[in-house]
Image 1 (cartoon, rainbow, N blue to C red):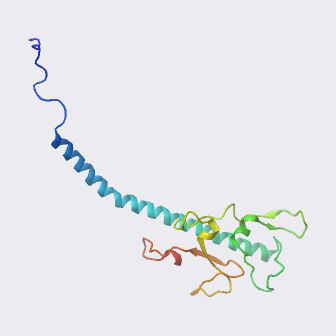
Image 2: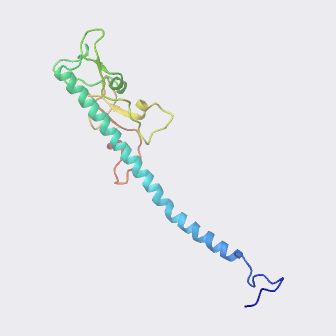
Image 3: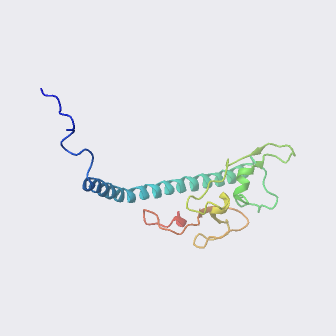
Length: 169
C-alpha cells in the first residue's frame, strides 16, 4: 500500500454544495408547512377540552350549592324566595364559601377552589369575568345575568370543531 503523496488530500471536495443545502431546506419547509395545521388543530382541541372541563366543574358546583341549601347543609340566604331552588349570587361565592350555620364562627363550605377560566376568553380578564352568566329567572333562549347564577356559558362566539358554537355548550 502506498502512502499518500504530500499535497494530495481528498480528491472529492468536502462539505455540501449549495444545491444540496437548498434541497434540504425546501424539504424541511414542506414538512413544517404540513405540520402546522395539525399543531393548530391540536391546540384548538386542547382548548375545547379545557372549556368542557371548566363548564362541567362550574355547573357541578352550582348544583352542589343548590342541593346544600335545599338540604340545610349551608345557611339559606335571607332574601331567597321560599319554595324555589336557591342558586349562588356569584361565582366568587362558590370559592369564598358559605356558612354552615348562623353562628358567627361557623365553618364555611367551599364548592370551588378557584373559578376556572374560559380558555377562549381574554387572558387579561379575571376568571369570573370570562363567563356569560344566566340567572334562574331568564329563559334558555335569551340568557341574561340576574340576582343569581343558574348557568354559565362561554362568551366566545366562534364555531367548534363539531360545528356547534362555544356559547351554546
